[in-house]
Image (cartoon, rainbow, N blue to C red; front, side, top):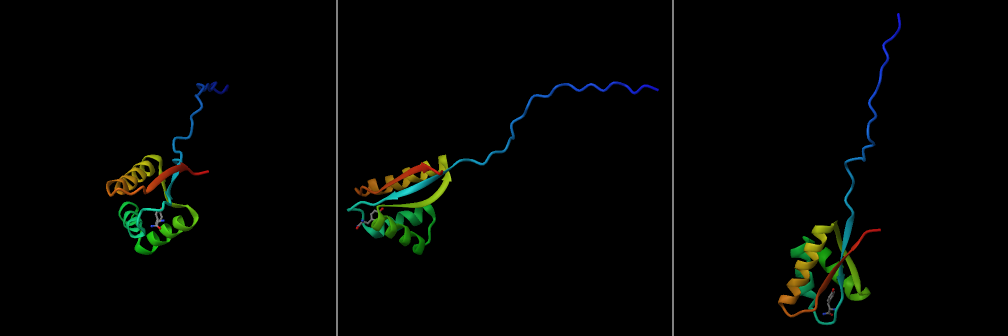
Length: 103
Ligand code: TYC
C-alpha cells in the first residue's frame, strides 16, 4: 500500500534566545588630590571590595595611573562609576571612575 505524503511547513530561522551580556570594566583614574583613605572607603562602599582588595586597587591606580576595579553589565557599571565619582565630588575631590567595554 502507498505511504501517505508527509508535507512540512517551512519554518523561519530562529536566532538563539540566550546571549551573554557584554561586560563593561569600571576603571579608577588617579589624581593628585583625593586622599588615599577616601579612595579605599569608596571602593569598599560602592564595589564591596575588602580593605585589602580596595587598598591594592587604589595603590595600582596611584602608581600606574589607572586600575580596573571590576566588570559588570553596562547599566550596573555606569551606575556604580557615576555613584563613586559623585561620592568624591560631594567632598570636593576630583576622584574619577569611567567605564569601557571588555574586548
Ligand atoms: N594620588 C592620590 C594621593 O596621592 C591618591 C589616589 C589614588 C587618588 C588613586 C585617586 O584613583 C586614585 N593622595
